[in-house]
Amino acid sequence: MFLSGRTALVTGASRGIGRAIAVELAKAGANVVINYAGQEKAAKETAELVKEHGVKALVIQADVASFEQVKNMIDQVLDEFKSLEILVNNAGITRDNLIMRMKDEDWDAVINTNLKGVFNCCRAVARVMLKAKKGRIINIASVVGLKGNAGQVNYSASKSGIIGFTRSLAAELGSRNITVNAVAPGFIDTDMTEALSEEIKNKLCEHLPLKRFGKLKEVAGTVVFLCSDAADYITGQVIAVDGGLTSVI
Ligand code: NAP
Image 1: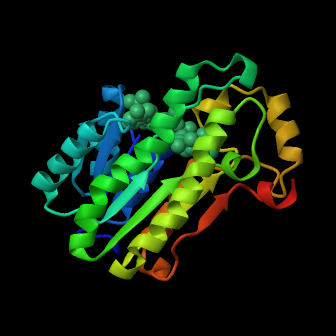
Image 2: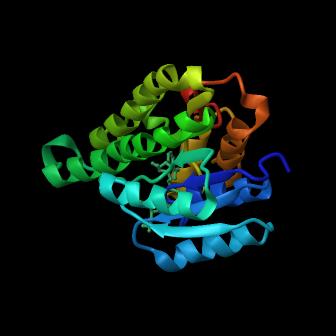
């Protein structure tokens, strides 16, 4: 298996896209660290799914918005696995509202988790990867970071920020054989989109070239590809996994 012997840390891996990424990385042979914020039971379930593929799983609670907690998490990972080759910054939240109704707390929570969280994790992990002279960093952005969406100024600012951050960090770390890329999912079948009625889903799909929502596996597969040797020469890129949404609207 092509990721055998490598260690991958996936933030926000207790459910949704993060869980799918953790499982697909395990299928490819990587040992996986499952980070979560509050849902311990769900995180442990992800760990069981990961272990079914014959690799090791380590569950760590840490708020990515806190550098202190992130640093402790990386120390724990190194104690357990001695190395860390893959970082997937997936943890993310939404606090949607129109700007006139958006509270400071909604702005701060989204920017601190989605954008500062990526900064915190990359800052802590870069030290390890620079020393090892190898590494893969994949940041989960969103099509909303490419196109914008009413009611999501905080979320889209955080996701556009991740894209700029990704390109700049790729330029900083490239000479040490560390690639940094972003994946921008569109409408994906998750808990979040399950709440939408069939009617709304069908309306949204009408505008998509592929006429359907994406599957968790399709986002996770793109992340695994970026971790593979086939992606050795890809860095500073944003790959939209969006059924063609950003190419037509
Ligand atoms: P989700 O189901 O809501 O899961 C969010 C994950 O992030 C959970 O594991 C959660 O942990 C964790 N998390 C939240 N705040 C955290 C913090 N401060 N520190 C550490 N972990 C934290 O999300 P999702 O829909 O799978 O989305 C995953 C990523 O994809 C996000 O970055 C999101 O913006 C992006 N995305 C999603 C879609 C979509 O259609 N769903 C589309 C585009 C982009 P707990 O379970 O412990 O709370």
